[in-house]
View 1 (cartoon, one colour):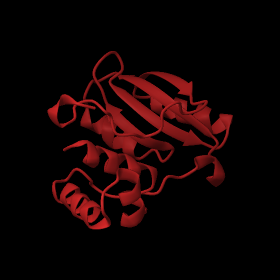
View 2 (tube, one colour; view 1 turned 120 degrees about the horizontal axis):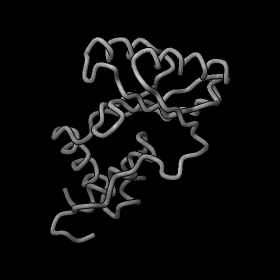
View 3 (cartoon, one colour; view 1 turned 45 degrees about the vertical axis):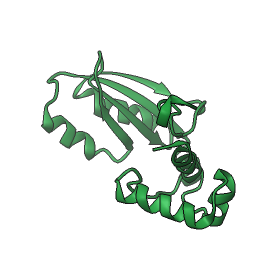
Length: 150
């Protein structure tokens, strides 16, 4: 994993459908070199798939939230199986620290948000924050790069 791979991953996060020629211009490599690197990243399981970014407000879900949940029964698989059934939850993470679970959700109104909070609160103590905006979009961290150089 070198800086070119990281630059490619960043470019693919911006546009997973970008043609190799466009990616090549962004990372200053030839299109065949980009194609080979992308194929290697896919084969190694670094790239696990491609997905569309969706503006949830355009599909009637303008209110996005983060919900922290401290479970009554920590780690109970039954709770996770129930959380999966809640369609307003878009992501769910098991985490360390005070909350056991952190979730992202999207709803169409404050009434729906209240219903979501009530449904989640059955499993423990919850704390909800409404997302105002995203300060950082999905990106590849620039931490360790081959040789320790950025």
